[in-house]
Every structure is written in C-alpha cells, then in structure tokens.
Amino acid sequence: MKDIKKFENYADLLKVIGHPLRLTILAGLLERKSCVKDIWDCLGLPQATVSQHLSILKNKNIIRSKKVGVKREYSIENELIKNILKLLVKEGENGNKNG
Amino acid sequence: MKDIKKFENYADLLKVIGHPLRLTILAGLLERKSCVKDIWDCLGLPQATVSQHLSILKNKNIIRSKKVGVKREYSIENELIKNILKLLVKEGENGNKNG
DNA sequence: ATTGAATATAATAATATTTGAATACTTATA
DNA sequence: TATAAGTATTCAAATATTATTATATTCAAT
Image (cartoon, rainbow over all chains, first blue to last red; front, top):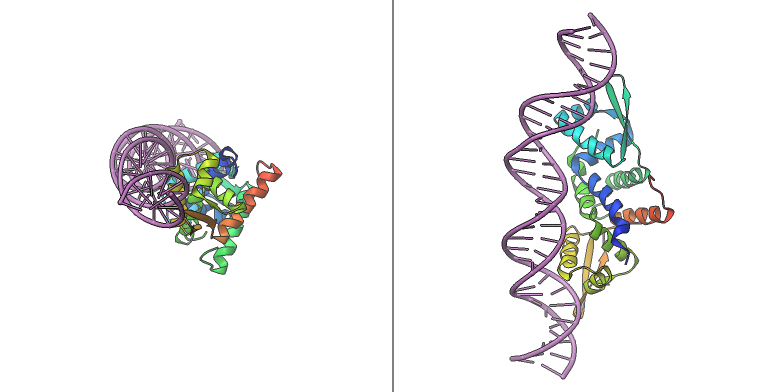
C-alpha cells in the first residue's frame, strides 16, 4: 500500500476540480480560452462566484491568466488535469454510467 | 461552455477521490484487492476511519466488496476512476510537477 | 480626472466534511 | 453459548467549503 503523503498533492488537485462549477468551467476552457465575463454570461452565475472559483483554480496552478486589455484570458495550464478532463469528456460522449 | 448539470456527477466522483486517505486506499486497491485490516495495518490508521472512507467510496460505486469468511475484500469497480488512478500513478512515476 | 466595463477581494452566514470514540454487528471456532 | 477477529455504524466536535453581498481594483476612453 502506498504512503499517504505521496498522494496528498494529487488529492488536493482532484478535490479542487471536483466541484460542479469548477469542472464545468474547466471543460469550457479545454475547448477555448475565455475571459470571466464569457464564463458567467454563459453559465448565468454571479461574476464574483466565477471569479472566486477561477482564483481557487489559479492558486493550484491548474489554470493561468493573461491580461488582454481590460479583460483577462484564462486557460488550462496543468497537463495532468487536461488529461483527466479529456477522459471525462470522452466518457460523457460515450454515455457510460460506470466508467 | 458546457452545462453545469452535466458535470455534477463527475464532480461528485472527483471530490470523493480527492481525499488523501481515499486516494491512497484506491491506489493500493489498484494493485491488489485488500481487506480492511490489511489497509489500516498498512497505513497505521484507526479501523473506523478506514471503514468510513471505504463506505463513502462504496456508496458512490467506486469500489465494491465481497465477503470472504470474516473478512471483506475490497476492489475497484469503476473503470473511469481506474483510468484516472492510472494517470496519477504514471505521473507520479515520471516525477513530473506540472504535467 | 471621471466614467464604465471587467475583474478581484473581503467578510460572513450557511452548509458540508472529517475525525475519533464508543458501540454494534457478523462469522468462525471452541 | 462464549469468545475473538474483522468490520460497520453512530454521534458530536472540530474544521473546511460555499455562496452571497458589498466593496475595491484595473484599464481604456472621453
């Protein structure tokens, strides 16, 4: 059996992306870079809520942001997370229930 | 941008495996089936704690258990989770930080 | 400098999660 | 039936997370 310490960082990452909003945001970012307004416009959520979740993702280095004029463009930075997202998207397309 | 509902189930799964103990337990189960005592012996944790986490994993159909005499043998049931675990293990072996 | 659009932060109340301790259940065996 | 090993459940305290509201910041254009 593996040591617990070894998995703490991964567990932390998984917990962070294991939130419906954050996961939805990430799935969107997998397709294209977006700014905050794009996201909350599209999801119908308060701006602050979206900004907070983006901030959480950024703190874990899952996403990165780049200033573009008055906007801020977000994109996914972490390749492991990208790969997990791709698994999920593929799974969703196949319509499987149990993985 | 995708709809939030669509990702709720996946988010739920990710959150559940996004716990250091549960992730460690799952990584162990990826290698071999184990009973509760094997696990808490190995990790040095209270029996109740391990049993509780196994119960959480079982409720989400991530693992399954089979009675073997007085013991109970746990194994991973969910293929999606298995695939995610494999990604993590591979990542860990490569020693990448951002991958 | 002021305005407005885009974004970030802070504070807080509500809610959820985690852990540990105690207890109960189950099965095999004497 | 009594005992022991393995496992599960319950409860409560400590802790962490979430959404909301309000406020602040940044940049571009006037």
